[in-house]
Length: 287
Image (tube, rainbow, N blue to C red):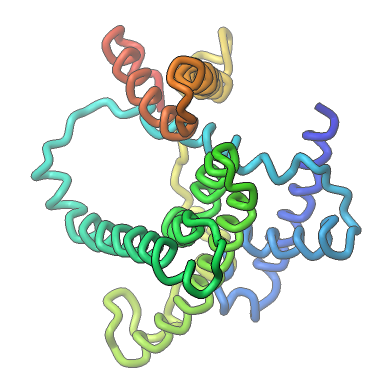
């Protein structure tokens, strides 16, 4: 337990330094580098695989997959109303279709490369290598860690490292390449929100809402603190789903010998838990 606390403590220190740099250094602000990405770069450089200044434990690489499952446990919680397919498509249809094409293209191209082209260039390469590319590019670090762990359990020993590497490459390309595209688009008048890069809101650069009127509430207190803290109540729900997910995945493996992705099962069980909460009238207390 002390090891986990120290890992998170060091990560918090690095994150704090990265946030100060994002707030104070104009060059970093102009690049719009997310604070966690900046902190991750520092962690790699200062960690045991490079300068070895910060003593992260050997367990730190396993946290991403676990935290991805915890995140998935919360995705289905809190939804109260029903939205028709037509309403959803009217509101988010263009984004949904664009993302769908991008995701399906990445998975298709990745599988095609992994099964056909890459084995011809590098004989003996794992046939699922191509699957790791979209896991990182389209899915990000969380999906990469979760799927990487799943493939490692199935015998692809380097899947986790490879998928995380692709996720990092994708984030770097998306951040720096995206800024280049935005700058070009803004200068040519192709953007709808701003007509030049310097017109972006100040909070986009510093990451701080200096104007108090722009600071929206991020949650509601649904539980009286005389009985239980609201944040503790929500953590309770998330970790109950997490327990069911891990136990459920282990049970399915014993019964079917199939490795069920824990984070995928967590998403399903979070929806089931939300249905149960709504059916007994407790859903209104989930924010």
